[in-house]
Length: 81
Image 1 (cartoon, rainbow, N blue to C red):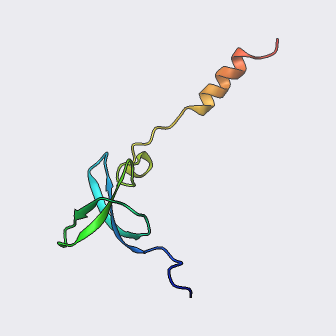
Image 2 (image 1 turned 45 degrees about the vertical axis):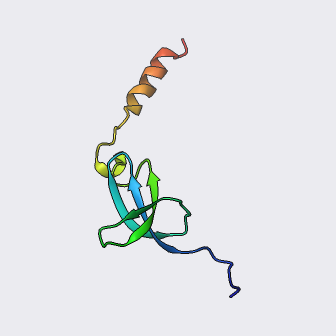
């Protein structure tokens, strides 16, 4: 393989700003911030607005829409007479 063609794949900490949850994984994303992790090492930090810890689908707080009621209401309102 050619040298210097692949990005730097390294451990990175992602921090969810809405739930104050952080996890360590590997990524090629570049960042200027860093944070000291639980193991005592310092890793690059990426701040995200939403993650699996705060997303409504994963937390079980998902809102369901009454689409059937809306369709019936529309048909009643605009039914041809």
